[in-house]
Amino acid sequence: MSTEPNPSEQTEAVVSDFIREIVAADVASGKNGSAVVTRFPPEPNGYLHIGHAKSICLNFGIASEHSEGRCHLRFDDTNPTREEIEYVHSIQEDVRWMGFDWGVNQFYASDYFEKLFQFGLELIRSGRAYVCDQSAEDFKRDRGTPTVPGTPSPWRNRTVDENLDLFQRMRAGEFPDGARTLRAKIDMGSPNIHLRDPGLYRIRHAHHHRTGDQWCIYPIYDYAHCLSDALEKITHSICTLEFEVHRPLYDWILQQLPVPAHPQQIEFARLNLSYTVLSKRKLLQLVQEGLVSGWDDPRMPTLAGLRRRGYTASGIRAFCKRIGVTKYNGLTDIALLEYSLREDLNKKALRTLAVLRPLKVEILNYPEGQVEQLEAINNPENPEAGKRLLPFSRTLYIEQDDFMEVPAKKFFRLIPGGEVRLRYAYILKCEAVIKDADGAVIELKCSVDLDSKSGGPTAGRKIKGTIHWVSAAHALETEIRLYDRLFTVESPDGDSEGRDFKTFLNPRSLETIPNAKLEPSIVQASPDQSYQFERLGYFQMDAKDSKPGRPVFNRTVTLKDSWVKTG
Ligand code: ATP
Ligand code: MG
Image 1 (cartoon, rainbow, N blue to C red):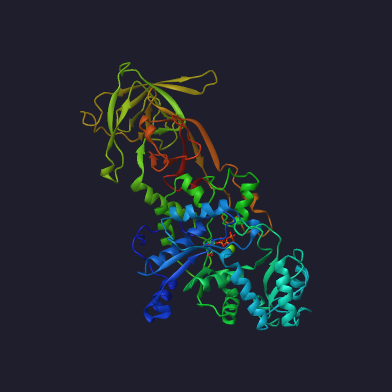
Image 2: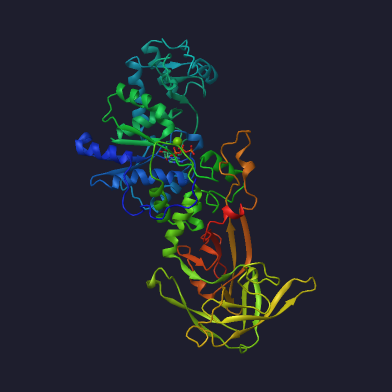
């Protein structure tokens, strides 16, 4: 894995990949009347994460690249016990935030429950499905293994009439959960385990967030998914690699039924990101066990968390473009996501001076009560961002780290008797160090070279270090949250010793700084604007916890990758 992504990599133009090539060839050959219809099919059982962003960019991206293309947003809501309306809303918000629009094409698998049931009857009538009374354990046992063929169910040869009767009574609620299933009748000896009479329907007396108590049987994913795709006349059904072995079943079901279309399933490698878990089940566990503050905790890899932390949709889209689409599973370095983000924020963030751990400085030769407004540049990458005025006065705060009483080698900042340049202001000299009873430095008495301001006679004097500062009387006090990786190891999911992923949680993933000092222009901050606190990183106001006059800022990302050196 490289932590130094190649900046020349293409991020603007569309980069082709094997799926785009298949789609383009189908359009050229007139397949499906040259239509391009994709779908993004999340299950509303959690918030979307950065892995979903890859799928969103792929499906919505391909549709947008074809004049008549469209991408459906389909909620795969066949599992009533795990799904909630809150998740539906968060998914809609996140897809929109990513910059995509499904227009009128929003669907729910549950819209098709009646049709799917009728298709079930159809499969029974043609002798291709049967009601099985086996328990889940017996089903599993008799299914065999990849090398051992399965054993047919004792209920495999029920008559069509008996199957029709039982399936209808399953629907009518006559049987308890788990008592019976509807199974496809395919081939118990197939080398593909998914073709060994897979389940199509199960009994579950559960309330569904959309259909209420109308149903007590629910279709299995493999059955509902291909039929939903076909009913919506999807042309290219793009999914992750684990579904490659399900493809024969996808095709088998569609071949047995009078469906309006037979979509082509194409698989690609899912995103795995270092130092991150992307399983909704695990993310839910973090939320439920209070290990994070919620789905939108800024440390979470969810789109809601990343957004709150200050990630931009354009930065995430650039990342998705950069990683591309392949057939090979791998681990993507999270540094690449951070790199893509920095590149985007560098163009957008307003520069600001902020002091996280303040050390008081009194400038003995600067008149008491005098305030100067010094000009500062908002964004050197973008002249349109303009300039602002920074108040300068006799008492300042500088960063504790920018002073060393006994300097280390190559420390070019402030030392006793030494000089440093104050960003946008004067050259500062340390005249005396004030300590408390324990010997800790609590204040510096300094002087400035009054001729050294920009344009002044000694402005060009060679000074090795430049540090940031804020005027004490003008500073706005805020809480700042510094984040580090949520996990301490590259692959928190997989551990050969079978340790739980939570073992690898980073106890230092959140550091709260209660009283940082910010330059006064920050009162105009909004949670939609990114800031670069000079020398410290990119920050964004927390949309949830900020209060008027007391903003909270999240560190989105550091200026450079510091993990490699310190981790
Ligand atoms: P999980 O296993 O965490 O529950 P999922 O795949 O079941 O995730 P879905 O809601 O079914 O989650 O996902 C919706 C779409 O997003 C699917 O088409 C799926 O292939 C895709 N997707 C999910 N995770 C990733 C990922 N890490 N990388 C790329 N695509 C993904
Ligand atoms: Mg899924």
